[in-house]
Structure formats: C-alpha cells, structure tokens
Length: 83
Image (cartoon, rainbow, N blue to C red; front, side, top):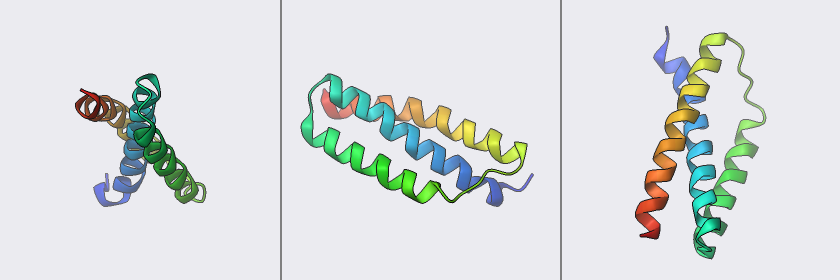
C-alpha cells in the first residue's frame, strides 16, 4: 500500500463530499454566502477531478473513504457555522 499515491483520491473525495454536505445544510438554512462559497468550491474541485482517473481498486477504496469522512466533517463544519 502506497499512502502517498492514495492520498490524492482520498483528499479529493474528502473535500468534494465535505463541501456537498456543507452546502446541503447551507441551502436548508438559507445561508446565501455559504451556498455561494460551497457551490463555487464544489465546482472548482470537480473541474480539477475530471482528468483524474481512478485505476486500481485500492485507489477507489481510498477515494470512497475520503468521501465518507468528508461527509461527516462537512456536517460538523456546517453545523458550527450555522449555529
């Protein structure tokens, strides 16, 4: 297992899902500045990820792990911001 090689798919998925979860809360609470910020960052990350292909199953699993952790952190961050 090469952690350096798998860091990129993990961190990319983490950030994408974190911002999607945060944006969901921002939309629900009508926090317009948060909506604009999260939406912009989601789109920026997607443009950077379009060219990144996940070849091995190990990379795919690290991507999924990053997405899962990003979802939890995104909820925590958005709750902290909107309280």
